[in-house]
Image 1 (cartoon, rainbow, N blue to C red):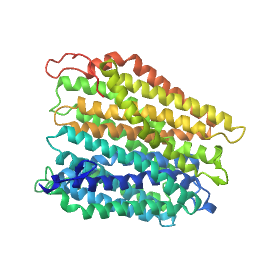
Image 2 (cartoon, rainbow, N blue to C red; image 1 turned 90 degrees about the vertical axis):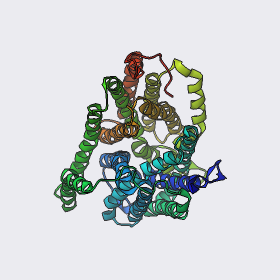
Image 3 (tube, rainbow, N blue to C red; image 1 turned 90 degrees about the horizontal axis):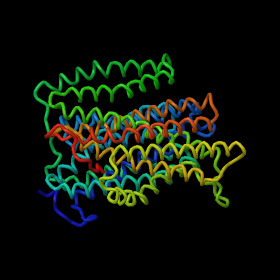
Image 4 (cartoon, helix red, strand yellow; image 1 turned 60 degrees about the vertical axis):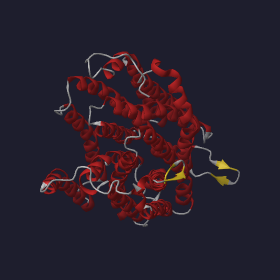
Length: 496
């Protein structure tokens, strides 16, 4: 198959180079926009912003992150059943490009259509590209793992560079120019993808499980009744002014909270899931809930921590004032530096530390980050503080992320019933969406409590969740490691 011809791109075939470039630019557009979205929403209209209240802006930013996570579920279904992974990736890239293009238009009316297109496009690109990598390396798991590791690297490179570009343009020139830079990045990705189309052979050209005759009509009818009509009604009410933004955010937030729970219950009751699998899935529910708490803490970064960088951090470097959004590059820098250290640590610990203990460590580190943030907010009451405060906060959050995100994905794949691996991975990101949405809503507390108190409450939440998970790590680890054959606890083993 032509898709497997090797040419040496990072030791991978030519098709990998095409997907790598697409992924890099897609992530550039996402992280670039996320770095300036909240700052644009709260900026004064005289400065080109929307002038939204900080709480509404935080809720909108959190919901945006949550919906990007959630969109992979319907996007994956469309790739599997209707478009095929290759066309789904192309269509998604075009939608993301169009969305960022609308956001680049200096008009408030294009904000929500632009965000909507980016969300829908991301839902097609993420599962579409992952499916293509999986198919192109079918039967060669070691090659697939190496490929996904390189994709993870591309995410961090993009997350590091994107805020530097879009943040500088958005904060110092014009907000919509920053959004335009994200659009340009995605244009490059789509052009590269189209140019490398022939490298993929027949992989992803057709749906894995095409819809049967008449099935598409039934699906569209159900989707229209259950989703389309309510969305249309809410949209019309919002545009007409009959439904305030606060109510719209609340309704969408309720949907984000409800979908993962309903999806988990449906998975638990699936006929193919036996009693042993249900034991593991119920234990996994506690892990997923714990991960939501971590993502709730993590979601403060693009929102309130960005605002803290703008208003309370001394950002002068000689005669140059560092854009506040540049602090969003600190996390991916630490991830690039510390990921090999974390991987070596998990190998060193081996079977002595299971997934619950690692999750607990991640939550405790997240809680510690907001202890530092509370101290920084207290110090900021006397004037602008050193940027080292935020550097320490982001360092602790990154250490926590390395103990939660990759471990959680590995665990989701391990405990998944046969044939349900994709759905379990989707479920992990659905609970991440819950955390991001809840983090945005929780930010409303900054209207009623001092900033230092708010950050201390987040610290207590993370520390309590980490302590509770650590206390329950033994029983949880035993239930997660139930033998599928014997129906009894297996010897403990690392899930990293």
